[in-house]
Length: 194
Image (cartoon, rainbow, N blue to C red; front, top):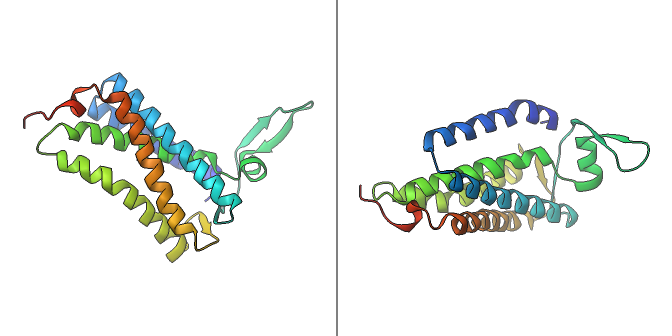
């Protein structure tokens, strides 16, 4: 998949789904901001792990194309595409990190917050808390190692344990930030009666 196709087709869908979740859950502003900060931690750690894996030659992204981007580092302005910028400077597909920030981070944290305080659906919060990192790691292993249908190519046997570690660290670090910032709110303080 090209990065420009991802930005044009997938990113708007992710944003619409995220806004629909916000509309449906009607969470307080402080909870939404805490979930966004937790999601941002998740996305930043994902990028850090990807960059580490690239330089250690454990995995790399196989993407083509890019988004026009003008980057003025010196006179005159140099023109790059985002794909070229990624390949030359960061080796990361920056638009892809909207998924861990908004979906695996913020949306999941909001759902955990919503279900945590209910006796009937507390199990669903626990399922999300345990299941999302497992799902993410298994999805990566299936797509990269078994079927080779992912946009990531694994270059080493070390890739799969590092990927599992990445999912555990990034998800629970983001959740820790979210939990600390929203700990005083009712859903995390008490169990509401059914």
